Image (cartoon, rainbow, N blue to C red; front, side, top):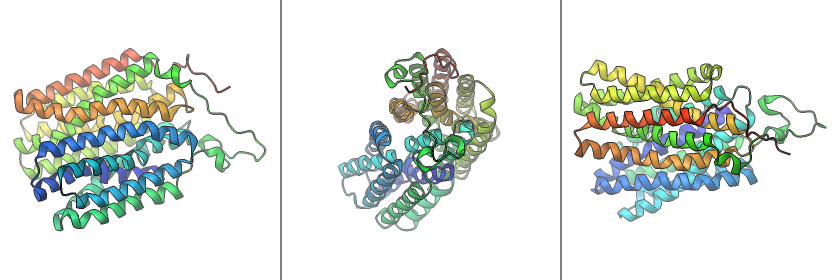
Length: 401
């Protein structure tokens, strides 16, 4: 299950989240379109993906999760193949909207749902390994995508990229993933279930109770701020590094960020379950604040890379903890709906962060000011996590009757 989730997220992140910057560059170069309109299409992609995620959660509750992932792989692969045929800017908005549907159906919501259903005792480690596919996709897949497009052109590369997206999501989604351990003769955590044993009922807080709770509201707002500052910092990092060093050093900076994120996430999956998760995410958000401000104020290569490494240590773990916090507090029963709702609201931070930092760069004193503001937003997110209270408080956690 974990390996299948890892492969699916490697594919969706490498061709999707990180690949969008590559497609933007190629379309700008080959079509001569304005970067502003291309960036708006990227924002639309994230908004559509977040909105569709709400419906993906409902599909997961009613149907075999493999069908949802396979459907997402087919839609995503087909839309990515069509990307090479866009000839007008409005075509891009249509293709990106379709691509976002596939990205949502073969992405974090179904993968983390599978992991939370299969793992209860070692959930943190399982999610950390599966979600490492997000960073690994940026390291192992996206550079190959860029090389392929640079060697030919987007029209030539796009059908092959669509085929690879299809293979990378459909095969592991169908052959390595299962919706529910009970359906294949297991209890959670892989314990065999006797043939005559009654199915284990999924525990959890009712949806309406959970979504109105102080914890859910505080965590969701905290992630809008923490991920908005994080994604904004990541998307602007290459340009900042190029302004202060050179193109080669900037490329190495992104690699250092991704590799640090991978290592830190794997370490965090083993260490963080020993502590209260709400305190962990609060400390990480505060650490991200320090890293972002340090990046903004660093004008030497050494200080810049020390700051980037600290930033990388927070990046993967903050993202990993969102599903863990929701599953720990509210249980498994309504997890897909709760996580997809929290993620959808968080999309406004993810989509707005890069725009905000870019606007501050152009209008408010360069990247020094932009990254300081991003750091303040991350600190505000940490305060929201503190207000929410402990994830281990299950006073509103009701078992399925």
